[in-house]
Amino acid sequence: MVVDAPRGITEARVTNIVRMVVIWIVSLAVVAAVLGLFYRAYFTGPTDEAMDYGQIAYNLSKGRGFVTSNIVPLGLYFWKDVREAYDLEHGPAYPMYLALLLYRGTQDSTLALGSMIWFVLSLILVYFVGSRLFSRRVGYWAAALLLFAEGALAWIAISGMPAAMAGFLLLSACYLLYRPSREELDPQSGQVVEVWEERTTRRSFWAGVLAGASYLTQLSLWLLLIPATIYLMITNPERRRKHVMLFLLGFVLISLPYWIRNARLFGNPFFNLRVYEVAMATRPYPGYSLYRRYEEGKRPPGVITLFMENTQQVLGKWSRNLRNGIGALLTFPHPVIPALAFAGLFIPMRRRALALWRNMVWWTAILVLVGCSFGVPGANALALYCFAIPFSVLAVGTLEDLVQALFEDAQRVWRWGITGVLLIVLAPLALTLVFREAKETREELMAFNVISQRLERVLVEFKQRNPGGNLPTPVVGISDVPWRAAWYTHHVWVWLPETPMVQVPMEIGEGQNKFTVNQPLPNMAAVKDLIQRVQPVFAIITPAVGGAPDGERLQGWASHYNQASQFIFQSYFIRDQKQAQQLAQAWKSRRRAPYDPVAGGVYPMPQATAGRVVQNLEPPRWILFILAP
Image 1 (cartoon, rainbow, N blue to C red):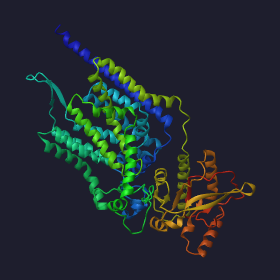
Image 2 (image 1 turned 90 degrees about the vertical axis):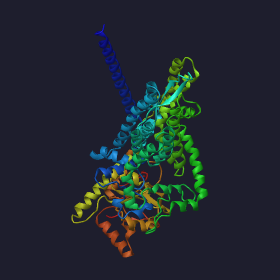
Image 3 (image 1 turned 180 degrees about the horizontal axis):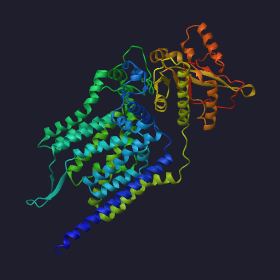
Image 4 (image 1 turned 45 degrees about the horizontal axis):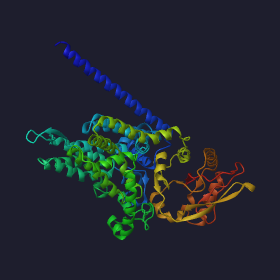
């Protein structure tokens, strides 16, 4: 018997290990299946925000540094050369991570893969944190809820945005801040009391490091410092100062290189161009118009000045954004998850340690919501996506505490309760997958692929015709969708500045098939200062005329433009009528489309030739212009 006892223990341990390995393999297989199915069903291309991160990551992968190819006119005061425009808007952590994936090539699927990796790591972390703070079943079901929430899959898993990475680092930092406690029986009073467990100061330091990493991923998460510092002061009264100092030290050490870089380049370690969004989306500065403002040699107005001059407008926008942000906070990624997490605020938890930790997470979310509501509409919702990861832990933990507090047969009620919650979360995903329509093709992605290929051919032709010519690369262009142009072409693109619109008549076809379309286009005469400042070579404009062309029409336009050799913009640089005649003669001598600027307009239009007549085609929405023949 003495000999068999260790063998029995060993067999039980081996059985338990095998069971856990099987559970992990099956769980990871389910995760891979869900992500793969959702990706194939719904991924039609990265979001605009993901493209912006992607083009910065591409520059990093090519050794250009932490620079952006998406140039806003407002920032031209701070950049000497637009080809070396150091990024002023994003944290560096996520682009540095993406650069590792983009080193061997850029594809839309690579951006989705970047966020999927962090989403899978977040699922594992949710299981781990839920198991440590509550119980193993809480961790398992919290990860399941996050996996099957359609909003999390769409906006965190495959979006290509940094929400998954930010949420992972946020939950990691919050977990290291947590000081555990246990329940013991007081021999004197005979009651169960909560006893704080020992927590080393090293955990506070590493929590600060992870908090700094989350800040470098999503800059608004610096607000975690406020509730985290208060939490450390409350839960560590015996060594309060040391814990707080080490936490702040860890945060500062990892953030210091980024602050030094900002101080050297812009004179302010905390400078960020997005602070100007305080005044945007208001009556004086509708939409993103402030980003499009440019005055040669004039520094942009200070944020405090903008706020004081437009206080009523800014506060009105803030209140509207706050209301919309509260709705986003309480419904993402599925209304059940934030509802359960929010209900926990009104339910006394079994241990005060968990209640304080929950309050820290919620106060961080509230501060981010309040702060980001000063930005443009929708900015606060994007900033709150990362909180879906810690909220999934709080939601299932709250459900477990609620069941144990209210019901005698807690085990049975728990099984029914968690099954019902999972089915409610899973239902929208299942219905959309079963009854989904055919995946729509994003025409702009097809268009930019065509444009990108054409642009590269033009550059090759230019170098062949001018062997001794000097064309700095990447080339500079202007566009009203510069983030997309930068991602797909890998060149530098400047936002079209705020300009008046003009109606330009465009004639298409010949004879009976000839018709004219008036399309509103920006008046390029109003952007003379910007053109002289950045010296663009190309332009990509998206006139909003009609619907997006289908693939056949798009290819027809691309074929026509290959023969016509694109629109010509050099007329913007002529000084007199003599140069205009020389330009027209030079254009005709190349035997391309006739040069005939539209009277009263600003865009020279291609005319249909005898060799190829364009019939019944809508004007394309994504057009490549060449500024020099």
